[in-house]
Image (tube, rainbow, N blue to C red; front, top):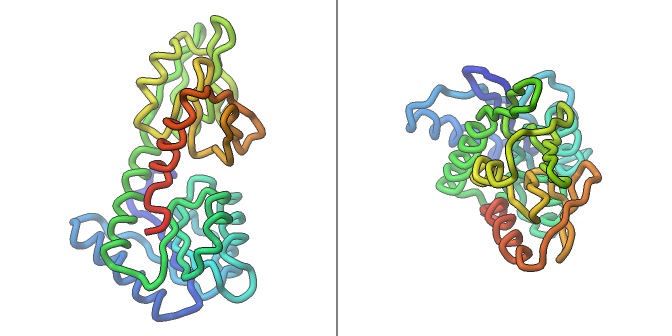
Length: 241
């Protein structure tokens, strides 16, 4: 998410009542909290949403709409902007697993509830703020400044610590304990003495491995399994609200 004074928010549902209601509640939330009103864009189909040239920060997306379904639309949107926060709106719980694999930010059940929408907007704004937090990576030759979401995972190999990011791989002069303290409130988890992962990139995990969307697998110790599972569920907390 780039530094803009206004958020860009899309609402996509083929039910005009839902679209208008969501847009009204979103506007009311920002006004009542004395925040600058976002740019709100309304769509009744996914094709027009995908074709629009706006870089969206939040997208409220019905999962069942004419033409392309919400999951496929979400995939296209994330391909265009991986930092977009997608809220899936639906009355069908059967789509929850697919929504989770898409890394949907929130899964909101119909009928819609104003207080739930407010809570989910608030959660999204917290992520938006965190995602713009700068992290300093110190190497022997240079200092690199990135946003926390650009860090995918960290791996210690012997005495060398690699910070793997969307911009490349860097060798940090800092130790694993430093990074654990720096990142543990920003959606990261130390799964093993040699790995810290960004939970945004986790697609699945078992009792010994964590699989990232980059194709990398990180070790997960047995005694850390329950803690990681709890942390990951907390990360996804609110998915059914």
